[in-house]
Length: 438
Image 1 (cartoon, rainbow, N blue to C red):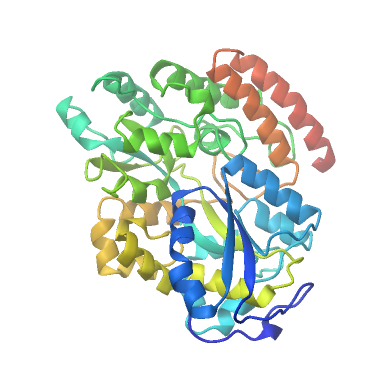
Image 2 (tube, rainbow, N blue to C red):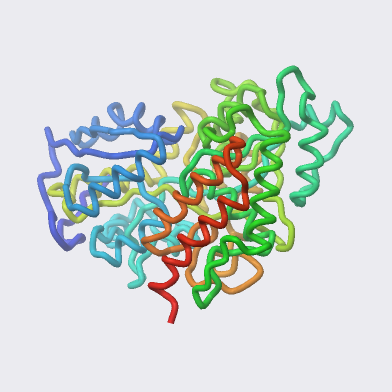
């Protein structure tokens, strides 16, 4: 990243700090492939150019959420930068926990702020319209499937499948190759693990966590039907140990040829198409998120860089953030690691890079359209009390969603019934609703 950043661009606690040689910053990241990549590339690029050393802490998603929430909410100040998502940013910005980042981006002409995709900017802004999370990569969700395996079975995948079609295909693809299961779906407890895909199923089946006037709906017929469908599909044709499988486990299963289909984040496609880590590169097809009662059902998410107000190194942290979300970093990834691994889904220009277009030919257009189609203001069949597709944007949802997810995971493992899981979830949701209902 060229050009220096004015210290005045960022107000609030912890501003400034030396930006030069010998300084270091602490960055907390989720353990996804894109973060592993940046960890490998930083020393020979960012640190070499700026003299700023980056100390990374990388954790699985659920552990990351606990750690970053604890650090930011208690103002412990251990980290200068942390990866957070569209759920946390608006809430934490309202609480005054985060530095505003938009002014840093607009002050640097090399960053090209206007190139950021509008859904990403909107989802990472606070109520005041200012940007508090800088997208590292953005995603929706779609269905990934083995083209060769379907073809060998004489089966075809619709461009926009229904969930019933997916279930029927899973039954036919189960055992298509030795040890292969029909589908991989997240079953790992966590509001951002099993309930990320599962809430999109709830939405398209006609369910919702809460009505617009804050009536809890966790044990409603539509919510129940969606969860039963998901649990039954996993138990019949899903991956072994599904109750402990999250994004990472499903990515591994799909890339190693152990499952025929996988419904999850569009960002998973880059790894699937990398022959250095995937046995199925070039063999995967991509279809839009399956539906039931809605026209589309993909989620909207970004893993984004946030700067806690407690940092004493705001200048150096901002330099890192703008580098990590910048066009030049995308080129570094493409040239050093392969263009399919570019952290995409955040910039319009990414989809105009010839090398990326070639590497992402199978999934690039579907990913971009899925992001553009995602509507966090109207993701289901009825009005919602908050903006968000696979989450409810209130502080209590992290705890609520995680507690209900534990019950659902137990049902996936055969230790609980869906009805009991959702009855318990309804009681918890009703307690949350009391705070908001008028």
